[in-house]
Amino acid sequence: SLQGRVQRPYTRWSLLAMAEVAALQLLTVPWPTRLFLFCRDAAVGMLLTNACAVFTSFNAAPLLDCTAWPRLAQMSNSPMWKFHLGNFLVHMLPVFVALFWWLSLQGPT
Image 1 (spheres, rainbow, N blue to C red):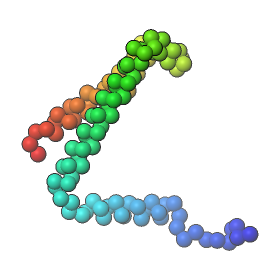
Image 2: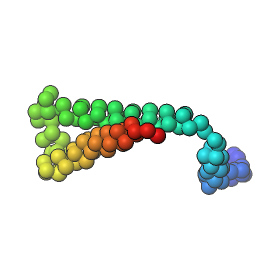
Image 3: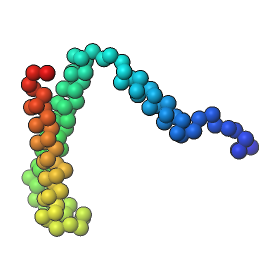
């Protein structure tokens, strides 16, 4: 058995340090501004689309099953007010944040 005889040339921390150096080198590359703006706009657009899809699917559940939300609240062992507060924070607030972010990027850059 080779157990205990094989020395690892890298530790977890040295690999992490090498990854940090590689990331810092990527940050110093003079990326084209248009490419950066395109990636930023695409990411914010995808975030807004995803937030709206989650909002729509979760809030459409009572239309298909009127007992969906009470059963979810019962499964999570929380009162309905806490369930609705969590619903707002997790499913509705990201839509407003993403929409605000997207609208703020529509101005001249």
